[in-house]
Length: 126
Image (cartoon, rainbow, N blue to C red):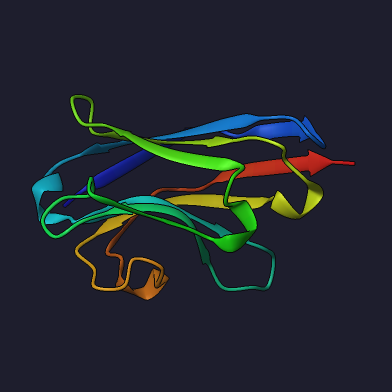
């Protein structure tokens, strides 16, 4: 199975920036989407930024409306790593961020993903 190992995140003040990285290993050829979800306490996971395509996660990008223009998702194909650069952070961006990968039809739907990282906490203070 695909294994996802996340790094980055942490704490920052409003307006600051953070970076998250997710290194994938295993049969990543079995996935067509890879990216980031976040979860607030007591809430379901929501898609933040996803790379996806017909056969590999490189051709299209999904961003949640709340992060457009502030977050950038990118992929290093050689390292099989997906990164999320988060800028102009606000307290409402705080939460647990999860890397996800899978073969999906709707990249923004968490239930369609078969592989998940352990999660990284992001805290933005005002």
